[in-house]
Length: 168
Image 1 (cartoon, rainbow, N blue to C red):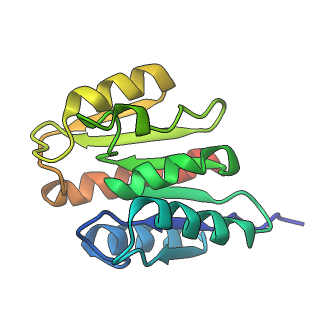
Image 2: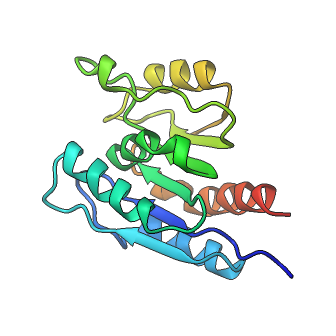
């Protein structure tokens, strides 16, 4: 019997919503590969509330989910890394100036890919480089800004490759 795939859960950024352009595109990729998809709604919530919401959702899962996050949503996903089967992070808010100690520890043994724009005007690339180095994870630096929308096709291809590597 084939084991069911774990759910893919999306955590959106501070200024976006649960089914924005980027999440919808990546969710379509996951669904096309047979992965169940969830996207939590954090609108109007601070970081601690978002973390609690994701942890509560995670408690309902029979198997460790794949966590996907963008910006603040990536930071939130990182807090649950030890309870995930993989992490796909876009422009993660790590080592932000003034909030360096708020960066969650790098998850050991969890497959993780980070995608970041070289011209990101919100999350400095230096903190992401540092985090990826410390985590020993895959890092893709793309031409583009914080939203990465001009790289949507490449982002979707990277996500598809990430999921395929998790479950051959």
